[in-house]
Length: 187
Ligand SMILES: CC(C)(COP(=O)(O)OP(=O)(O)OC[C@H]1O[C@@H](n2cnc3c(N)ncnc32)[C@H](O)[C@@H]1OP(=O)(O)O)[C@@H](O)C(=O)NCCC(=O)NCCS
Image (cartoon, rainbow, N blue to C red; front, side):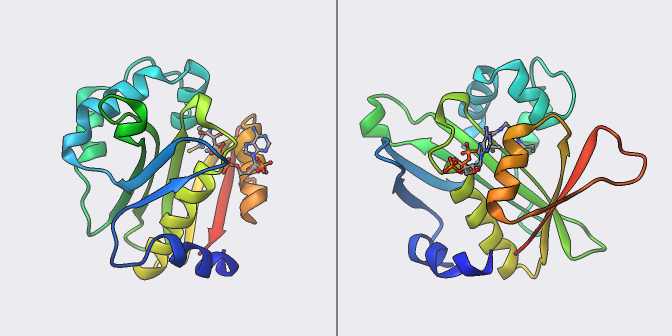
């Protein structure tokens, strides 16, 4: 990740909270911190994800996220968490902004690693959104004194395994965790 520092800084200065990007010729996308006012948009975003994607994100079969979980996702405790969303540019979409990805980390109180998770909408993959969000989180993590973004990845999650490889993250199998790999990304 260190080699991408300059690249990230060029799109998102530490003092700035949002960036507008055009990824692979796709529509303009804004990447910004999640807000409490995103509750409805976040509910719509998760409701539109396939069952398979929800399973990969939450590691168990999920139909609907509860209102409590959705609220917790939008009410970020900035002392310990960082959460960003990507939304389609309002004017380009022709209606209210729609979320197409979300990514977050939560600091572990007693270690220098933070728990990291992300999901990109099914039809917005492979255009660099996941990479962009992860780079932004990594940048924020560095500023917060976090050394590694860590997360559990289901063994059959081929996309995340490829994604981890592309980021230069380490994937290891903990003893006794047959279904899950542990991702560790130095920031
Ligand atoms: C994993 C995930 C976040 C990747 O997001 P993305 O926006 O598609 O990723 P990017 O476009 O930035 O991909 C960067 C690189 O990762 C690798 N990669 C991404 N998806 C891949 C796939 N399906 N198979 C193999 N490699 C893949 C590729 O090397 C890719 O570069 P390339 O497109 O130039 O070949 C997305 O597939 C996703 O949301 N999956 C479901 C949720 C999930 O599994 N979350 C992780 C658990 S918390």
